[in-house]
Length: 140
Image 1 (cartoon, rainbow, N blue to C red):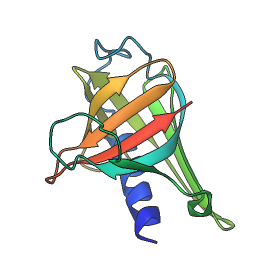
Image 2 (cartoon, helix red, strand yellow):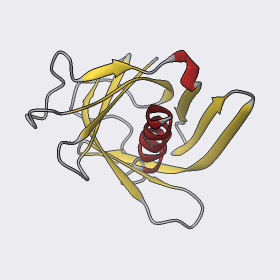
Image 3 (cartoon, helix red, strand yellow):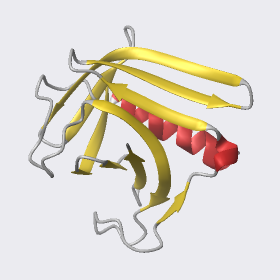
Image 4 (spheres, rainbow, N blue to C red):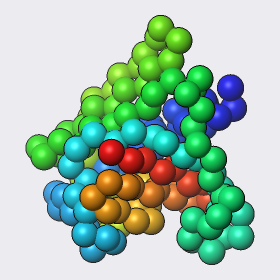
């Protein structure tokens, strides 16, 4: 249950972190944020070195359901969390620039996520709100 809640929190954070600028790509790896991403791993930066080291993440168990986010080219996103016959959907706007995804849902306060790396098939986000920061790895 703790992993499920953390997964949902991270996915929501990722979703809410994309509202900072209109730039769709960044210099952090050459990949594009546009498209559908699935949360596949979670963990913590145990040694606080801002790099995903061996053993710092674990796969999200299938029993936790699926968590996806679709960043669209019009700077909107759709986030879906589904598990055991129930689902939660969120739509909002995002921006991405300077290694930051800023998302905004309805009239909420924008959320910011730090992109550690972005390639064509892997997005690594670090939650820097606590020490050690939490990792969320999304793939497509």
